[in-house]
Length: 154
Picture 1 (cartoon, helix red, strand yellow):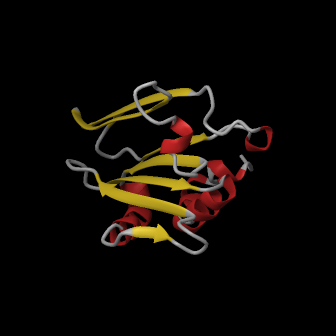
Picture 2 (picture 1 turned 45 degrees about the vertical axis):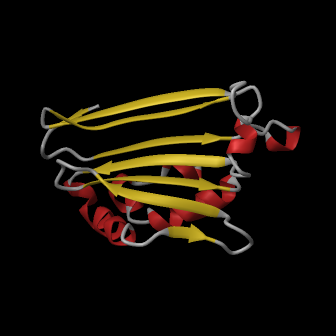
């Protein structure tokens, strides 16, 4: 993705464990996602998510430690400054919800070389819990974009 100085951008990469009710929890799965963001002619993010089973280590299902949904959200640009400001303030503390035993975890990283930019990563035990986390953290996205992609009301 290439952006100019006055651009605003939200990139969402969301993956779930499969049809859990059918027993498809990270089974026979290979997932790879590459994201590169060029801001004002400079690369500010190169990100890869790669999930697969290998014979050299424990299964993907074991490595996911019971988390069934993961998301990476990149937020850049002046239109999202109020949201980015809140996310940056949140990044100063370790985020973990331990009610009922680590229902979700998240981390927020500032993008270097961008006036207003963060990467938000989270994993949750269920898609509903991830949805709840995102609705709480990204409430300021709705007034700017008009909807939030994870609520199914596009």
